[in-house]
Length: 485
Image (cartoon, rainbow, N blue to C red; front, top):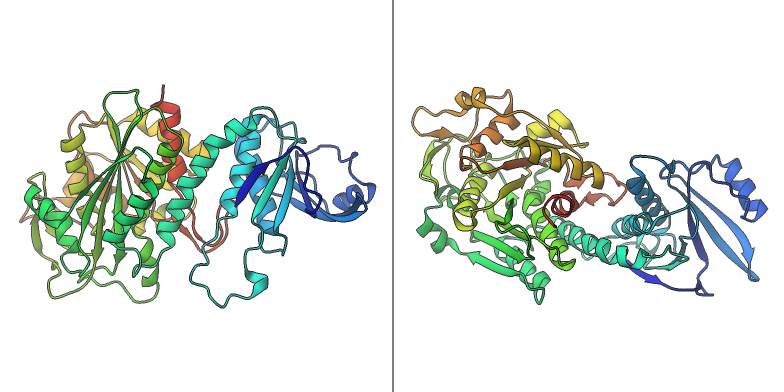
């Protein structure tokens, strides 16, 4: 989706849209349009869209109104964002190629206007690369938005929002690619391409390097696959706090469950089991693209979990980089095995001020929270609160759950230091408790279980059916509000 700021609307664009607050007067509209909006019960509520037709400059124009809700709402930015996204959703496959968005209505600030454009661009993202026989009426037609009457400062605000959009779109792309295209090595190469020339530093560990470091847990997950495992780190030195903030993402590019094989129905969805790594990569691209004044590192443990004669077995004991041993009772509880080595390496290598991991870790998280919130676990109340606030601001919502010593006994192993699964109760909590054992004392840490959030079987306000981009904006906003000076 291309967005251009212009002084006057191009004469050949038929579709004209504007943002309307709940209760705004429509007196300046063509009377037939105003009457039509009233008849359609359009009142400017958040996400409402009205479409009508009017003669303007001797041409028939298609006119659309997008509702932004109440002006005084605590969710004002998100509501305006939803107005922009609703307008694009309405016309994305309408046959219209261009839209004029008139931002001179709705009493918008520059930041709110940028939010409307962010919603529009994110909702306009589509990845039809592999759909060669898609009917014309189902193809995306809307390509360009011409912005007129933008409030002063909107273009500057949009520069920053566009960087966030770029990162979120990268996350969506990574999650959307099929597993025969996206695997650990190709994930790395896509990141090399995306970050080329940005000033970010990329570090890659191959299997011999990880073996030398003692990453038996991560390597154990990938040993049944023909695809080699990788550890990827993207470093951005933007200044500010001396010690970096580190994000760690689970990057299981396909998860069959290994020897503990998943049921076939729905297994195709496991291409997005790298959603945590995808969110980290997208967040880093957003931060780098807007030149964030912060030192941030994104670490991604990249593996493919396959059932093979070389695959690890239930009952195997692996030694992690930290020296702790793990009894692998279920090879489908592989994400925590990837993360424990990635977390330990990130702490040893970078000595972070704080560390946040993201993972599509447990099905139990979906049972607990559905597809409305990601799960938040933390050893630091301030960090938990900051992440929750960032989630509220971006719409990537989080809900905090407990961890604590009482859950440790559920993952104690009779033959090793720890087992990789506990009993059925508190499944997401024991997974978080497992990870907590690999966090150095005194290091603020949060774990985000985003299993229910990275992929959706129905459209949302900033995504079509499929990858949602969840997590990239959340991490960017966390840095903006709490780490940048």
